[in-house]
Image: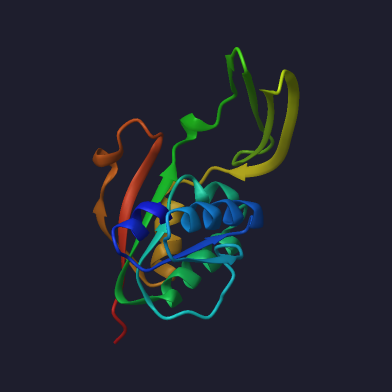
Length: 188
C-alpha cells in the first residue's frame, strides 16, 4: 500500500518489524523516485513522528499479535500517532483463513501448514521451493499466529480511544477478512 499511496502524493511512513521487507520497499521506492520513510519496529512499539491522518493495519497484521496486551498496546500506539479525528483502517481475518494449503507450478512449490495449538493460537509453517537457474532453492518459515474475534478487537479499539465508523467489508469481498474504518475519538 505504501507505493500507490506515495504515487498518489501522500506522505507515507511504512512500519514493519522485518528489516528485509523494508529494504525491498525502499528499493522499489527508490526505483520509482518515491519518498517513503521506513521504520523497523512492531505495531505496538512507539516512535517519534508527526501526527498522521490515517493508519493502515491491513493484510492480516492482527494475526501476529499473540495476546491481549500486544493488541491493546498496538491500538494505543496507533491512537497516539493519529491526530484527533484521524482514522485507522484495519482488517480482522476470519477463522476460515486458518487452513493448510499448497500450490504447485512447474517452477514453484508452496506448502503451508496451519496447525491449531490452542483455541486461538496456531502454528504457521511454510516451505517454498523455487526453481532458480535450473536448481531448486528451498525457503522455510515457522511462527505462531492468532485468531481474534471481532468483539475482542472492538473492545481493544474502544480502550485505545477509537470508535468504529464504518464496516467496509463489502468493498473487500473474497479476502477472508472483515474491514473496518475506526476513528480516533476527539479528546474532551
